[in-house]
Picture 1: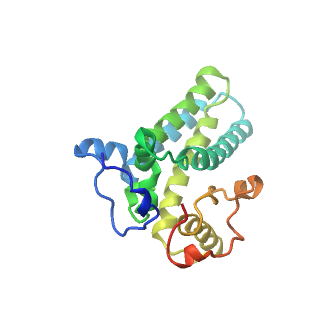
Picture 2: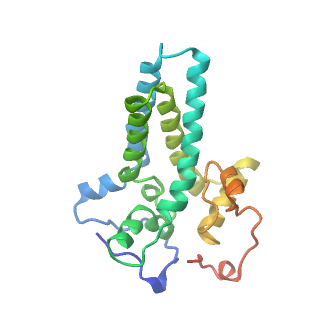
Length: 221
């Protein structure tokens, strides 16, 4: 595995794709997958959850649980991004793990593979939710379908914000918020597909003015 970016150069934005983090290409492609791979992995999960949920409850109830699952994902997105992905140990295994899971994305924001959540996180999150909702609890599987759909759409939406130039006013606004998170202040703006949680929890970056550091082209530590 490559070592994390040295503290003195932290925040440097690099063009192009990041170098491989493991000498073994198979391992490198497991830790960071292509966007098509994550779509292929999780689309059947959504379909299977919907299929096996049929008959567990009425149609409106199933739809309501799907909406609840999606809402649960948006909270996972916000708190996972804020607490897990932006917890940055200064050295040791924790620092390496942070760089592997998210730090490298901030250093190479245009690398599509680093814009997709690593399966090291996505599989446990989705699998754990399915197990807790259907294995230990009595929730219809559409809850898991909504959660998984939320995750997958978030991943693809995040990729879109990094690589597209949307013309729609709302999408332009959401892209601007996420770019502020990358290039102005990465301690705010954690809700990528659900920025309303930033408003609720006091981490909104929507009204923030440009700082001298951002004017100079740096990303705050």
